[in-house]
Amino acid sequence: DASGPTAWLGPVYPALLACIFRFFGIKTAPSAVVAILLNVIFASLTAAVLVQLGREQFGETAGIVAGWAWAMAPPLLLMPWLLWETCLSGLVLAFAFMTTMRLGGASRTREWAWCGAIWSFAALLNPALLAPLPVLTVNAAMQSRRWKQPALMMLVCALGILPWTARNFRAFGKIIPVRSNFWAEFYFGNVDFSPHPTGPSMLYQREGEMLFVADLKRRALDFVRSNPKAFARLTVQRTVAFWMQPSYLRPYPLLLFLVTVGGIVQAWRRGKRWLGFASAVLLYPLIYYITYTFARYRYPIEPLMYTLGAYFICELWVGASKRMGFASSDA
Image (cartoon, rainbow, N blue to C red; front, side):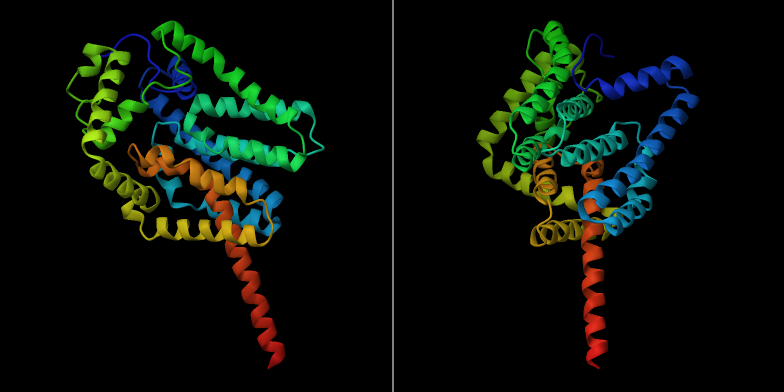
């Protein structure tokens, strides 16, 4: 029952659904089938990206193992059914990450600009995907020993976001780069979920988006100031939950987390480019630690986690084979 402009979501996935509705009908069964099929395609294409990413960063075998592991990943049984940007976010982040890791001293200016354009698309899809970008940019600058091209990449990314930001300023009279809902989500995760726009309170509908978000921001900050220990406890619980969800797939989330950490440590020990992977794993979840988390929120970085996990497993296999070979020859 809400009307008027909104910046609650980035524009990419709503625009995609709008195109589907235009040709297959609004909220019809054919539209649902097409939207789910697109999610299946996005998730499937991610496997191809992982093969290439693993091959480039960790070797041929690691890439193949990562691609096959992703093709059989438990989340792929569930995520395509969710009509959300989740599957597309996983594909876009993996592709943007791979493209950025390719940049070096021999890269042409247009390749840096193209990479910035990919990241701007990622931002308009889900701004949380930008979390590792600063570290990746600095790392690429250090690897290439260039600074103008990385600056150009960041400029192109900002320019790609600018039209939507200008639209938001015109609609709301405030500078909102992509989404307006951070403080509302912060309130829902720490105080109370009942005022959510899809719930029965109708507070959003009465106040409008900007007043609603400002109202919940004030309430949320009052809660944190009055209950710092409760906020800290909730943050710790969300941090654990982010890596351990969903509960019905345990111990799969724990195993995925362990092989991811193992992959980062092994890449560091072997002198591989571990920093970019570590930045995605460490920085992307921060916003969910302080708001709230569902299992699908981890999905966009899971392709990178599978790449790290595949590398770690390959390294374990090689190490075990060498030890067995040594033991055999010694015997």
